[in-house]
Length: 388
Image (cartoon, one colour):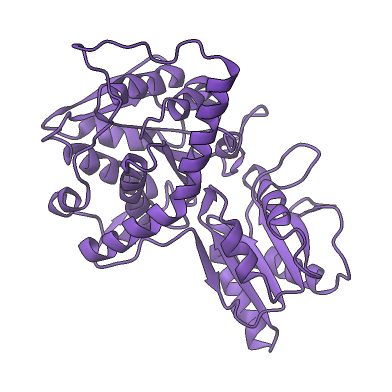
C-alpha cells in the first residue's frame, strides 16, 4: 500500500499501461495542463517509456488530436483533461469515438465556467454523454488506479473498439491522499495484451479516413456504434473477472448495490457522493428504516437492466446529481426515470447536490432521506446546498 492522490494513481496506471505495449507499437500521450488534472500528465511526462512518446501541445484540442493520430497508427493512446479543457477538446472527443479508436482519458470532474470554478461537478464529462464514449465514474483513488487499467482492456477489445473516460471528482479524489495498492509493471504486462487496432493506417495500403459519407452509410456507422455500446456490459464483466485473477481484488462492475435487498426507498448516486450516502443509509438502517443505495459507476452505456432489477421492490427512488442540465434537472435523474418507466408504482425524485462543487455532507443526505420518505409523489428537482 502507498499513500497517494487520485491524480498519482491515474498517472501511474496510464504510464504502466503505456509501457506494457512496448512489444507492439508503443504508447503516445498528448498532454496539456489544466487544474486539477495537471499532476496526471506531469507524472506521465516523467515516466521512462521504453517505446513511447509524451507530446506537449498548445491546447486540449491538439492533445486529443495527438491521441487520434497515434491510435490510427496502432499505438496505445491516452491523455487527461478537465472542465473547459474538455470543452475545447470537444470536436476531437467526438472524432475519436466515430473513428472507433480505443483511447483512454482520465477526466477530473470540475465545474465548467464561467463563472470560473475549480471544484467538483460532473457537467464537464456528462456533456459528452451522446458522443459514444464509455464513461466510468470512480469513488476512490484505488478505484481510479484499477479502473484505468480495466478501461484499456474494454476499449481495446475487438468487440468494442471505443474510447473510455475514467472520471473522478476534482480535489475530493484528485488531490486527496488515500492508501492505494498500486499495480506493478509485471502485473500490468500480464493483464494487458498488446494493443491491436485492426483498422490502423498502413503506408503500403493507403486509405482515406473520415471521408464524405452518404446518409445510408452514416446510419450504418451509427448502428455499429450502438451495437458496440450494447456489448460493453458483458465485455466489462469478462475483463473484471480477469482483473481479479491477476490482481487479487475486484475493480467493481457497472453498479454497486448497498442494502437494497428489502429496501422500500433507494437512493442513487455516483462518485464520492456515494461515500457520504452509504454512511447515512447505515444510520437509517440502525433506526429500523428500510433504505438502500445504488452507486452508478458506468454511466455510458447506462446500466438500465441492472437499475430496473435493483429498484423493482422499491416504492420510492431518490437520485442525487452532482451535475445539472439547464432547465431539466440532474442528468443521472433523467436516465434513472427513463430506465424505470412503466415499472409499477415506483416514483423517482431528483435532488441537485454539490452542483458547482459544494460539499455534500451527511446532514444534507439526511435531509434528502427525510424529504423522500415524506413524499406521496415525485415533484420538480430539489436544489440542496443553497442558503435561504
